[in-house]
Image 1 (cartoon, rainbow, N blue to C red):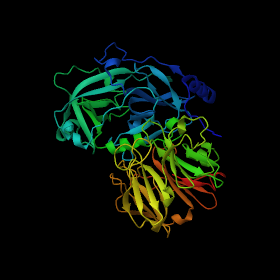
Image 2: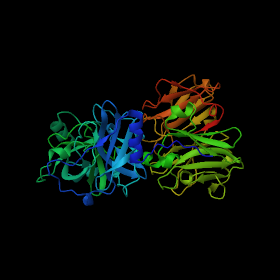
Image 3: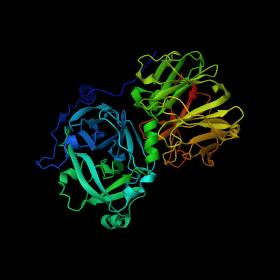
Image 4: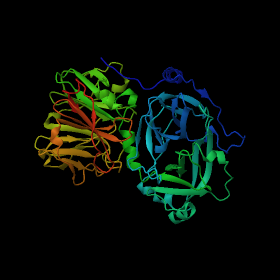
Length: 530
C-alpha cells in the first residue's frame, strides 16, 4: 500500500484551497511592460530552458505577496533560481512557472527548494537556489566550468536573457512575463568595483551594456531580472543576482558565476528524491523490523516524524536494505536501491512512476551480487563531479570503497578510499554540508564523537574535522538532505526511547542547536537508512 501526501495542485485547486482556508479569493492582474515598449526579444528567440518564475503567499489581510524572477531548467521538475526568489515557508505558500510564451500557467502548493549554503543576502554572494519546477520547457543549458576562464575575461561579449514583468497591484498576481534580451560585455573586477562603489563578492562578475547596444526600458530591468541567464559562446556563464525586489542601476548587472558553482548545480541536478515524481529532495528510508513495510520520510519532516506517513510502500520480505539513491539513469526522477538477503543489489528505476511500488524482482534493474560483503552502503550524491549520484560502501574489514555512478542505473568498478573505517559504529552521507557543492560524510566513533569528512570532488574525502561529542545518546543518526522547507540539509537523530531531534547544517561542516520533534511510533523502531 502506498500513501502519498500530494503537494502539487492544479491552478483552480490551489485558488479554491486558498479561498477555503483564508476566505480570500485572489484576482488576476494584467502584466506586460505597460507602456507598449518592448525589447527586441520574443518568445521564439528565448532559450527553451528559460521561464518566468514566481512564489507567493496569500492571506485575508494582504492578498497575494509575490516574488518574481527568471528560472533556468536544470532537469525534469528542477529549476535554478535566485535564493531570494523563494518566499519563507508558510501554510498558504504557492509557486509557479510561466509557459513558453510568458503566460501564467498556475502554481503548486509549497515552494520546495534547496538554497546555496554560502548565500549571503547582504552581499549577493552565491545567490542560488533550486526549486521544484513545472516540468515544462525543454533542454538544459551547458554550464561553464573551470576550463572556460576565457569567457570571464574583461571584454567578453555575451547576451543576457530574462523574463520580466511589472509589480502587480495589491492582492493580485501577474499573468504574463515579457521576453527580454540585451547585448552586454563582461567587465574586469576593478571596473566592477568602481562602477558599483564596492568590491564584488567572491564568485560573482558584472557586465555593462555592449557598445552601441540599444537602450533598455527601465521596466525590463526590475522584476524578473533576478535569475536571468548570461550566455557567452553558447554556455551559461552567470545567473543574475539582481535583488528580487531591486533593479539594475546604471546598466551594471551582477551575476553568480556558474564556473564557481558548477559542482553544486551538478549535485543538485543528480540527487533527486524518490517521492512525488522527484518533488522531494530531502529523504531517508525506514525499514520495519519485519521487513515487510518501508517508508520514505520526507519534506515536511516534522509532520512525518510527528505521525504523518510520508510515503509508505510494501517492501519485499527478501530485502535487507532500501536506500534512496538519486537519479541513477538520468531520466530526471529519483531511484531506489534494494539489496536482497543473498547480497544481490538492485535498482528500482521506475519507483516514482508506479502507483503501487512493490519492488518486484522481475522489473528491478540488477546491479550485481556480492553486496553482503558490505556492512554499510550509502548514496551521498555526486562525489566526483560528473553529475551522476555515486555510492560508498564499507566492507566488514573496515575498508571504505567508492563506486562512481555510470548514468545507466548502475556503477563502475570500485576504487579504494581507505581503511580504518571500522573505528566508527555509524556512518551517514547525503548532500553537501559545508557549502562547496560536494556531498560530505559524517561518522560517529565508539566514544560518541561525531566527525565530519568533506568530499574532495574526486570520489574521496578530506581529513576529518571534529563536530562534537555526546552523539552516543542516539541509536540512529541520518543526514537526510533538505527535509523541512528550510532549504538546508538536516540531520535526524533518534534516541532509544523513540524521541527525535533535528539538526540543521550550518554550512561549515557542522550543525546548529538541536530541535525536538514529536515522535512517531512506526519510525521509533524502524531501521533508518539515508
